Length: 105
Image 1 (tube, rainbow, N blue to C red):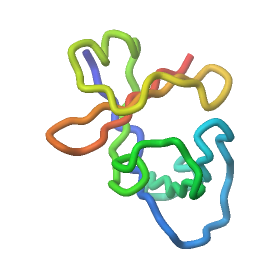
Image 2 (cartoon, one colour):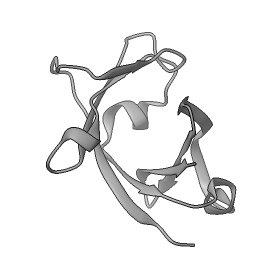
Image 3 (spheres, rainbow, N blue to C red):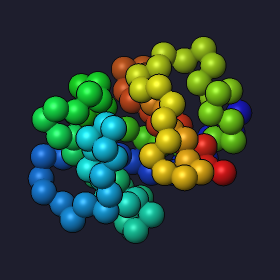
Image 4 (cartoon, one colour):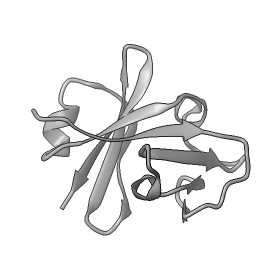
Protein backbone atom coordinates (compact mmCIF):
# COMPACT_ATOMS: atom_id res chain seq x y z
CA UNK A 1 0.00 0.00 0.00
CA UNK A 2 1.32 3.43 -0.95
CA UNK A 3 0.52 6.32 1.39
CA UNK A 4 0.97 9.74 -0.22
CA UNK A 5 1.09 12.62 2.28
CA UNK A 6 -1.86 14.98 1.84
CA UNK A 7 -2.19 17.32 4.82
CA UNK A 8 -2.26 17.86 8.57
CA UNK A 9 -5.61 18.56 10.22
CA UNK A 10 -5.67 20.71 13.32
CA UNK A 11 -8.76 21.12 15.51
CA UNK A 12 -9.26 24.68 16.66
CA UNK A 13 -11.64 26.75 18.75
CA UNK A 14 -10.59 29.92 16.91
CA UNK A 15 -12.87 31.40 14.31
CA UNK A 16 -11.34 30.98 10.85
CA UNK A 17 -12.40 31.94 7.34
CA UNK A 18 -14.05 28.57 6.74
CA UNK A 19 -13.94 27.18 3.22
CA UNK A 20 -16.60 24.57 3.78
CA UNK A 21 -19.02 22.83 6.09
CA UNK A 22 -19.73 19.09 6.14
CA UNK A 23 -23.34 18.97 7.38
CA UNK A 24 -23.61 15.28 8.45
CA UNK A 25 -20.64 15.61 10.82
CA UNK A 26 -21.22 19.32 11.54
CA UNK A 27 -17.59 20.06 10.67
CA UNK A 28 -16.27 23.44 9.53
CA UNK A 29 -12.98 23.26 7.65
CA UNK A 30 -10.38 25.26 5.76
CA UNK A 31 -9.01 24.07 2.42
CA UNK A 32 -5.55 22.59 2.94
CA UNK A 33 -4.88 22.90 -0.80
CA UNK A 34 -4.81 26.69 -0.34
CA UNK A 35 -2.39 26.57 2.59
CA UNK A 36 1.37 26.83 1.98
CA UNK A 37 2.02 24.18 4.66
CA UNK A 38 -0.94 21.88 3.81
CA UNK A 39 -2.74 22.59 7.08
CA UNK A 40 -6.49 22.03 7.36
CA UNK A 41 -8.15 23.64 10.36
CA UNK A 42 -11.32 21.96 11.59
CA UNK A 43 -13.98 22.90 14.10
CA UNK A 44 -17.01 20.82 15.01
CA UNK A 45 -20.30 22.28 16.17
CA UNK A 46 -21.23 21.53 19.79
CA UNK A 47 -23.78 18.94 18.64
CA UNK A 48 -21.42 17.14 16.22
CA UNK A 49 -21.51 13.35 16.33
CA UNK A 50 -17.80 13.07 15.48
CA UNK A 51 -15.61 11.22 18.03
CA UNK A 52 -13.82 13.31 20.66
CA UNK A 53 -10.44 12.21 19.30
CA UNK A 54 -11.33 13.62 15.88
CA UNK A 55 -12.56 16.87 17.45
CA UNK A 56 -9.57 17.41 19.75
CA UNK A 57 -6.43 15.71 18.41
CA UNK A 58 -4.53 16.76 15.25
CA UNK A 59 -4.43 14.21 12.45
CA UNK A 60 -2.21 13.46 9.48
CA UNK A 61 -3.84 12.55 6.16
CA UNK A 62 -2.67 10.35 3.32
CA UNK A 63 -4.05 9.71 -0.15
CA UNK A 64 -4.54 6.03 -0.93
CA UNK A 65 -5.55 4.22 -4.10
CA UNK A 66 -7.99 1.88 -2.36
CA UNK A 67 -9.56 2.95 0.91
CA UNK A 68 -10.94 -0.51 1.71
CA UNK A 69 -7.46 -2.04 1.42
CA UNK A 70 -5.96 0.78 3.51
CA UNK A 71 -8.50 0.18 6.29
CA UNK A 72 -8.07 -3.59 6.40
CA UNK A 73 -7.04 -4.72 9.88
CA UNK A 74 -6.99 -1.17 11.28
CA UNK A 75 -8.86 0.29 14.27
CA UNK A 76 -11.58 2.46 12.70
CA UNK A 77 -12.22 5.85 14.30
CA UNK A 78 -14.61 7.23 11.64
CA UNK A 79 -16.24 4.99 9.04
CA UNK A 80 -15.83 5.83 5.35
CA UNK A 81 -17.84 8.82 4.15
CA UNK A 82 -17.85 11.15 1.16
CA UNK A 83 -17.35 14.85 1.93
CA UNK A 84 -17.55 15.70 -1.77
CA UNK A 85 -17.91 14.25 -5.22
CA UNK A 86 -15.17 11.76 -6.05
CA UNK A 87 -13.69 11.79 -2.55
CA UNK A 88 -14.01 9.15 0.17
CA UNK A 89 -12.34 9.47 3.55
CA UNK A 90 -12.07 7.45 6.74
CA UNK A 91 -10.12 7.80 9.97
CA UNK A 92 -8.22 5.18 11.92
CA UNK A 93 -6.46 5.18 15.26
CA UNK A 94 -2.73 4.53 14.92
CA UNK A 95 -0.65 4.36 18.09
CA UNK A 96 -3.21 6.53 19.89
CA UNK A 97 -3.47 9.20 17.19
CA UNK A 98 -5.99 9.78 14.38
CA UNK A 99 -4.90 9.17 10.79
CA UNK A 100 -7.03 10.03 7.77
CA UNK A 101 -7.08 8.05 4.54
CA UNK A 102 -8.41 9.77 1.41
CA UNK A 103 -9.36 8.09 -1.84
CA UNK A 104 -9.73 10.59 -4.68
CA UNK A 105 -11.19 9.48 -8.01
